[in-house]
Image (tube, rainbow, N blue to C red; front, side, top):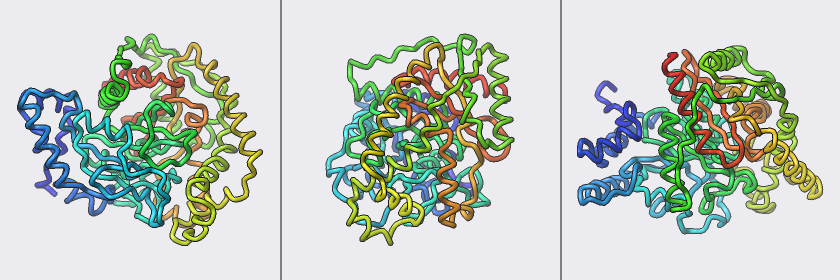
Length: 461
């Protein structure tokens, strides 16, 4: 692969491309061709893409080049080649398979949703659709119906890529797109980010519209970004939000500085069963930031463990309401066995039990919103352990145990309505993610904090 073209966004990121694109130093067509060549060469092994729309991507890229030459500027993401998780309806691409071989119910419609339209208005070039775990119900990334992408951090051993945005995580880590879109209902952006050594943003649920996307659980579903850096994520977040919200959204830098931050370290739940190497890397990072002026304070988050009782009830119930009992049972044999078993558990859920859990969650969200007063963010390891081998997930019982345990530190943010990011730590060996969580709708400030942390860690490395 010595003649494989280098990832064109690896050095300058989104900001560098935007500058060179407007100066006429690079074209959208040129970088799109590079990504398509990289996909053709590398993705045969990685399997990150479900569909590659080469002709459509090149046509869009050429159109962006003509527009910028004519003086029409669509903004910082104009001409940028992106990958999109295969859960969205996208015009002139195959209907989303959502990682499954079953006949899906018509719950998404045939029109592109608001978010995909916003990407088009931004001038993004759609390279294709990336693989997802079946029905998005899998944190490991292992999914037998459409195949499990190869974790890009270990090209010798097939490790779990993290899910359910498995293809998006692998695609950005392997340099097969400029950035990728994922969805996160329990860690489905942050875990692939942590396992593949990239940056992942889970937006506050309800901030970005999810119409036109297959729903896992509408109460917690959110759209997220997988990028090379926090800096790229902040630029993409502000650009997309500006399009979605128009003049009602005005990005305003909050003046984040490390030596003025107060970061909370949960004393309970988030440190349970954490691999000693990950715990050590997490503590070293906190020490590094503390030496640069960050204030760290311990706190209790008694609501965090409630996620263990909520998601095994809410997600199977939500999926059954979408698939339908008879439809599920008639096609169950076509599904991934671990995922089918999880969905089947929803047949035993009683309505009053679910409603009681939802009422409890409402109370807990209010309590945690108050507990954020005085804190800029909370920190934890993103995952309790490293990415396991895919062979460790092939036994249904073991696979389910790993899947439920892997969400320990990510699900609380979804359960409690927070925004969150996973930042890759500069370590040797398998990647480690550093999670930052913030109060609902504090997404922009959280990204600014992540940018400062990222810059400081880069200096350390």
